[in-house]
Amino acid sequence: ACKAVIFDLDGVITSTDEYHYRAWKRLADTHGWEFDEKINQKLRGISRRQSLQVILDHNQVSVTEEQMQEFTNQKNIWYRESLEELSPKDILPGIPELLERLKQHSVYTAIASASRNAPFILDRLGLSDSFDAVVPASEVVQGKPDPEVFARAADMLGLYPEECTGVEDASAGITAIKEALMRTVGVGSAVDPALCDAHVLDTADLTVDMLLW
Ligand code: BG6
Ligand code: MG
View (cartoon, rainbow, N blue to C red):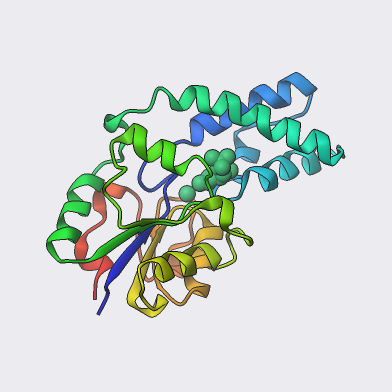
């Protein structure tokens, strides 16, 4: 039986796409790089550094390690400013009820996010105490699509991956969950339903029945 549900954060619990987009756009504009919503879609689920690399590659720009640090730091300062706007009303539809029902079923919950801002975001949403484990993104060596972050979440809960379900909105995340050998639940149009054990277009349509077995 399923003993835990491990959630991605950005795109599953709350939607930060627009905030990431604005911060990357500001950085790109500052340096005269091309960046649009289409490139932004490719940044779903991947780390801050990898995101910058995608933007640089698209613009055929190469930078020093020092600039890499400087640019990711600057993006994060702008991103953090907009995160100040987040509040509990930014929790995606159906999520509070779902977490409540999982608790009633005595199922553990965890967050497996690539975001180093995850604890801050959970705090802004008023969800700091709502999950049994939050994987520290800074300790994850291999980002999604590598299964590491999901495997670590199971480990933090003292469970085998086979006892867990993972929920993701990014295709890199779906691959990570599958490779971690967990039940795979996809959310939204960015993931291929054929790769998921269950799929919904909207978080409001997630049910306990599709998560548990
Ligand atoms: C993921 C987002 O959750 O976190 C990505 O989907 C983002 O878009 C990544 O790049 C890293 O986030 P942060 O907050 O550490 O810059
Ligand atoms: Mg996501």
